[in-house]
Amino acid sequence: MGEVLPIILAAGRGIRMASSMPKVLHKLLGRPILSYVIDAVRGLGLKRICVVVGYRAEEVMKVFEQPEIIFIEQREQLGTGHALMCCKEILSDIKGDILVLNGDTPLITQNTLKRLIDIHKNEGSLITLVISKVKQPGEYGLIIRDKEGRIKGIEEVTERNKTRQSKEINAGIYCFKKDFLEKNIPLIPKNEKKGEYYLTDLIKIASEKGEKIAEIEAPFEEVIGINNRLDLAIATDILRKNILKGLMLQGTTIIDPNSTYVESGIKIGRDSILFPGVYLSGKTTIGENTILEHGVVIRDSEIGNNVVIKAYSVITESIVEDNAKIGPFAHLRPGSHVAEEAKIGNFVEMKKSYIGRGSKASHLTYLGDAQIGNDVNIGAGTITCNYDGKRKHKTIIKDRAFIGSNTAFIAPICIGEEVTVGAGSVITEDVPDKKLAIARARQVIKEKKKD
View 1 (spheres, rainbow, N blue to C red):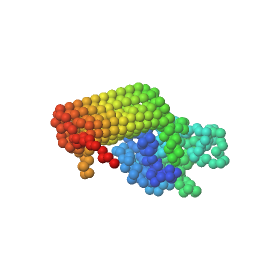
View 2 (cartoon, rainbow, N blue to C red; view 1 turned 90 degrees about the horizontal axis):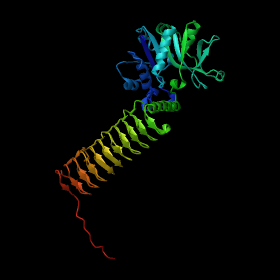
View 3 (tube, helix red, strand yellow; view 1 turned 60 degrees about the vertical axis):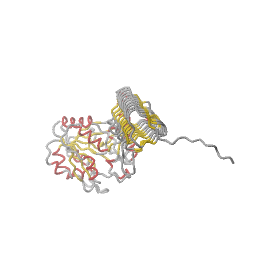
View 4 (cartoon, one colour; view 1 turned 120 degrees about the vertical axis):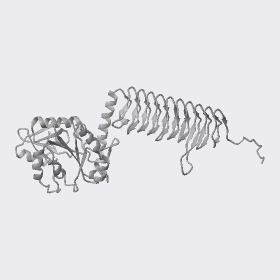
């Protein structure tokens, strides 16, 4: 491919987002908008990526600080042309071509960028740009051609030209010969109305000099820019559908794609089934033959094979091993680990706890800071009292213990193997192996007082 320096323009505030947050940090299916653009560029295998930052630059740099990324600050946001003017120093050190794209076009693909660069080199043009054909141009610049069909400029949409039958728009993605860019950036005129310098004026400058301008076409869904919350919702829907399509083609059943949300990077094994309302996010993996029922929410978790997660369960930063059953209405908080063939039932909450192979907590239970062995039965209403008001303490329940309903364990405490704990007990001391523990007052029956 030869040396190519990508410059991503990400300095704007994005006033139409109606937000104090930099536009490129707004989330698209769980990730900042700019991250998608960087990933597309990174896929080209380029050594350096230049990102122009401006509004709240420190925040953007903190999120994307990586060895291959070079940040250039545009202290005053005076347009896209001015952003390139701020890159003067780094341009002088480049011998190859310059790829320029906006940080708010998250759906652009690596393939389109590679095609742009290849055409640019093969055609020997000074500028190659990405265009798209649409029915309504909206706020995108219109491509203007001469009688021979050559691109001669980019024009804003006005009442005069918005009814044109041909709606070719500028996607704001370019490849420039470095020498042309370096020589002509200073010639970009200042827009009198807005006091800004527009990168698009380089197209007119090249055309007036008779220079060669090439183009490639890309689908509008790929080049959509994020200017407001409506655009963000549209892009989210496009990306979501693309992700779900890929999963379905790889063997995942998604019953209702219109109500299912899966963030990019999620891995799901074959023959798994996602019911309506499922939301998977973060670094989550789902195994094969696993069923996620209605309304299941999973984030940053590892789910094994042949798992059933019943309706409206929430799992965060946890591990669920093969053949386990979770829910309905279960809550696995960070640090939970459910071993093979274990069961966490309805209205059971776990936090920073391990429950061993074949063990079960079927109903209305809280397990916090607990280590539970294999084949343990936890009765309904059991609570590990892990917090003394200052510190957290651990509860250990060893293999094959049977815990009666409505038991409270006052941690720190250790319950031995094959222990039976009577229902309604409040256990405050360790219980040795194979013992029966009962901690409740004796039942007393008395005659009622007569009126």
